[in-house]
Amino acid sequence: MRYLLYALLSVLALLVASAVFVSTVLSQEAVINKYRNGGNAQSGEGDAVELLVVRDRLDLRSAALRDFATTPDGTLLTDSVTSGSGSYRFRAISFWQNLRAGTLIVLRFSTEGAQRQADTVITAGLNNSELFTASGNFNIAVRDMIMLKRSGEEIAGIGGSIHALAAGLTQAQTNGIRPLLRTSDETGSATPTVIAETPTGTLADYNSNRASAIVISPLGQTNTPQNQHLIDSLRRAALPLSVSAAAAANASPLSVYPVPAKESITVSFSTEHASPVKLVAIDALGRTTTLHEAYYAAGEHTTLCSTAILASGAYMLEIRTLGATQQRTFAITR
Image (cartoon, rainbow, N blue to C red):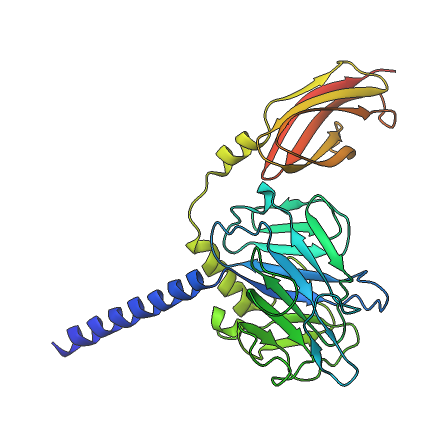
């Protein structure tokens, strides 16, 4: 009887822990997993922010990412127009809708288009006007705080925060900001990469002083084994999605003409949802040449691609979109 009681208590404890974990997951939408200060005092060149999606099917449309500025005496400024402070608002496009739990989103200070690496990492340029609207002068400093704000919230102030990550700021300076993950009061580096350590492997770590400033940590990858454990848990909790169905819906059909071609080919394709599109020629040895790359709205499209740099021979044209690839053969004759 005693062993049965112990067993029942153990099961109950597991159920409670699971309920707490699920509740925590559902109560948080996304967190800032790391950011990098590129060290440029005049602009945000080299800066990057990495988000971790917590809530499955997250909608980031019209959400905002902003940094803050500090005075020489260390006072945190929370207005929206201070020099050294700026923001980016996610555009209301379908790309930022239905994001999967456990996905890492790498946002660089660049104009690069949106790309999906496998099904767990997204990269995008903050200065790509098709993906974001910019305001102010976003520039991560040695002492700074990066905040993700909900859709519809004003840039100024700290209201509507989904999550914030800070380095080199004291508890007194960040009082009232929740949830907040911060480093100790000193960063220890002029160009730090600030990461979430998550020693317990739970979301509770993202509201603490358990961040570290280190020299570098690869973007689009987990920070620590415990961080990996948390992200794996989020991905396992995500609802199943038919990748093949999503792929087929996102880019179909694909046609190439004329065949054979000489100096150019015309490519026709359609996208059900807004998506980055990359057209690549693959020769018989597997060598690739990018012919075209751009971001397209939903609909049918036709583009002319120069083939002047391709030698005579047979090729495979591959179209790459979010979560999908399609191929068609074509040939070049001179």
